[in-house]
Amino acid sequence: MSHPHLSVLILAAGRGTRMYSDLPKVLHEIGGKPMLSHVIDTALSLQPTTVGVVIGHGKDAVRARISQTVQWIEQDQQLGTGHAVQIAMPHLPANGHTLVLYGDVPLIDRTTLETLLAAAGDGVALLSDVLDHPTGYGRIVREQGEIVGIVEEKDANAAEKAIREINTGVMVLPNAHLPAWLGKLQNANAQGEYYLTDVIALAVADGVTVSGITVRAHHLAAGVNNKLQLFELERIFQKEQAEKLLGAGITLRDANRFDLRGSLQHGRDVVIDVNTVFEGDCVLGNGVEIEAHCVLKNVTIGDGTRIKAFSHLENCTVGARATIGPFARLRPDAALADEVHVGNFVEIKKSIVGHGSKVNHLTYIGDTDIGQNSNIGAGTITCNYDGVNKFRTEIGDDVRIGSGTMLVAPVTVGDRATTGAGSVITKECPPDKLTLSRAQQVTVRNWKRPEKNKA
Ligand code: UD1
Ligand code: CA
Image (tube, rainbow, N blue to C red; front, side, top):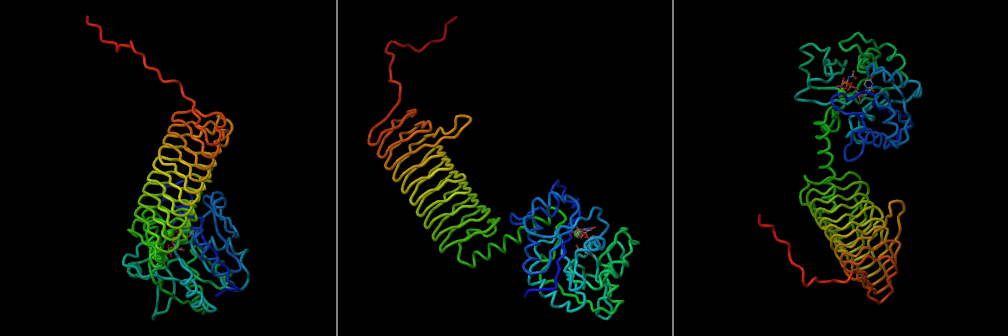
């Protein structure tokens, strides 16, 4: 459903004192994405005419971090939620409805908002929740079942404090009434703030219908004020993602030890062992297996490839039927073809490794092109950096690089060439030949091991 006369206003100016953080509260992340971005995406999914975000504390950091297009509204002094909407008034159309959301209520979903908008009709709708422990929240006051107002915790009497139906803060308001209602707000209350919640009683006084919708799960309307609440929502979010992936056929060895901070596309028969973290946009082909404790960020992995335990892959691609790790590090712009083997303690950066080539042990490959079916011996290093500039190494097909070879770039190793173990290669290695640079081995026949002087 699209809502042509809908404006969304997201309140996000608060400080977030209890996060004990220099980062503005709404920039703390759920699933690797700022809370505010979650709310903006959900708001945009309603296709409203405008999305305004009220910012104050840390406003520059918020603007710099959030990439979606929204209307930024600055509230320099946080005089209350009612004041925040007052500040936003000039940006709201004269008619239609305004949906008020909070930047620190990240898991609000479209279904809930659609229901709320439908319930509002021409009037007001608010989203409530029923809590066993309602302390701290505004209470929904009803008479004969009808909503008559909201009273904040700090202003509530004992009877009101006993009410378990609370205001989540999410509400739909008719714009035509806003100038009058907001104009009447007073700050003569326990917190000395202009409460948006006071518009409810004003609406009732004006004979405008106020509908209440109870949220279908607590987490959808749960706010984040501290790291404990952030953690709780993160786990709920991760569990939902894991359940979606399980539903789509992925095998997760433990759905409680799985973290996706971005997107994951996958084929059939994908198996992911425990404690792997996916970031950015990852794509796994059919039959890919990721062993325990890997970190994968913006990677594409071909069919049948196995990423063994404790590997770290970032901004790289791996072909089909390859084996990577354990303890491998693939850095940005590593492009590995099909059937490549990369073993333990190998780092590869900005390099192409051709079909079937192997780099199995303790090696650094940077700024290099390796052809097909070549083998890079243990402890090989491409010396690609002279301290100022980077240079490329070219290695052909069917090459055998001996263990401990230092390839001082720029340098070329021809097809079917072999280098001797321990060589420092500074000049071209011609195809089909053995090239080595190694001091002659000598044995000193008359040498004696020194002995301790006897005093
Ligand atoms: C508010 C509600 C309360 C509700 C609770 C739900 C009011 C008066 N009270 O209380 O009924 O149960 O939320 O969590 O509305 N903000 C601004 N500018 C301001 C003040 C707040 O942008 O001047 C933003 C905050 O950043 C936050 C949201 O509005 O995202 C709510 O403000 P907060 O101070 O947390 O309100 P509560 O006192 O918790
Ligand atoms: Ca709050």
